[in-house]
Image (tube, rainbow, N blue to C red):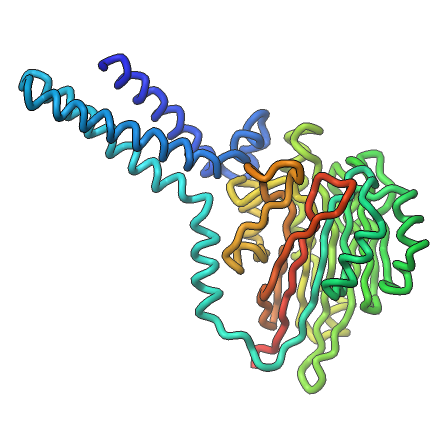
Length: 361
């Protein structure tokens, strides 16, 4: 049993190092294979639980054996320390889930405002333009989507969407500028709102261009609100870990650039930035958490439920790679609803979220 004890301690040390990766400084996760190892951290909880129960069983067996052989008491005590260590490791591993639990608690305490305006967005990675165009349109209609943000589009998919009347449903659109770094296709935004400005490359990253559309919503007696939409798709780690991390970090500029002189003058400083897309990252990645620290809120964290978006062919385990992030200035914004939906032809689920806006007064 001494050999088993040694193996369990070695495994514990490896699992502890795995857990500590989530607290690397921002950008330090850009080295291969760290993005992949960190992405799998939610699975570590199940591994730790299994080893914890095994350690408890081994401890009980050793205590029983020590009752008959007092000389082995110290050995049984070592197993008890191992149980404590795995219990602590289990608590640490819950860090992948606690942001969602706290988000659910905060959401339950907040009351939905009486007067608010709701924006419904849908984001989807179209997988090299192979996503079913008809299902994209049908899903957008079914869930009353105001703004559709797509990634990995192809010219053929855009033509199919146009044939199905996407321009009538979403009269305002902006397609990302052509780039030598297009990773699987280009990004685009289709919205029902009238634009006061558009940009086909709001943030320069080594990946597909990030288009943006800025609109102005009328709150009646309350001040108007400028809303900026952006569709992003940083490179996946397999296309370059450094470019992956730098791309995620650079997206913070989308929120920082929300208050341009034009939008500030038009909308009296009340702004909302909605950044969506396949961000190829999760809450455990230091680079992604840095993006949240810049001022963005994650809709799924706010609602307290982690929606799995990739891959569609596995029921478990799935990862949350697609996100709806929002950043409000001088007004309140709250995620009030979310859902994922299956679209044939792509390995990502469509992610739909509703953001409620209401005045500070």
